[in-house]
Structures are given as structure tokens and as C-alpha cells.
Image 1 (cartoon, rainbow, N blue to C red):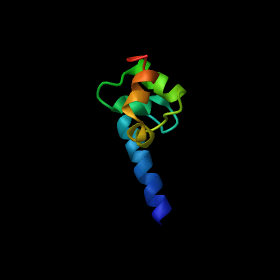
Image 2 (cartoon, rainbow, N blue to C red):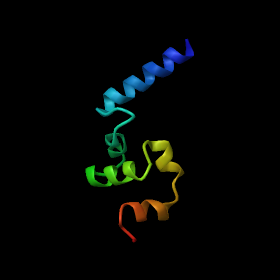
Image 3 (spheres, rainbow, N blue to C red):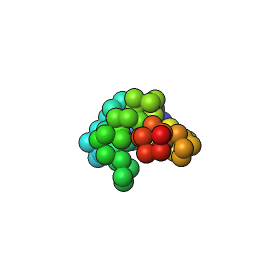
Image 4 (cartoon, rainbow, N blue to C red):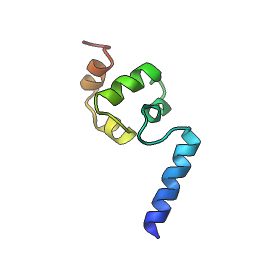
Length: 68
């Protein structure tokens, strides 16, 4: 039952955000992250909001070429 609930919540979140967990568009839910930054982050291995939250600020800046 818990797995079904978790899957339902994930589906609801994906539908509300109009994106799927394996797409870079998931990162675009964060204010200030557009299509270009989302693709750069996804390519660098940052695929979801938990991974983004765990990143050092300096790594995000380097990946987005904001402070090379």
C-alpha cells in the first residue's frame, strides 16, 4: 500500500509540474532555472531537486558557467 501511495504522489507531482522525473524539465520548477540551466545541470548529473539541494553552490555556478 505504501508503494502505491508513493507512486500516486510521484505521478501527481509530475502531472502538476508538467514534467517527468527523468527529464531536465523537473529542474525548471525552481525559480531562476530556465531551460538552458536545467539542461546544463541535468547533463552534469544533477537530475532532481534532491540532488540540486545537495550540491555545493560553487558547483552549481561552475556547471551553469556563472563563475567559471
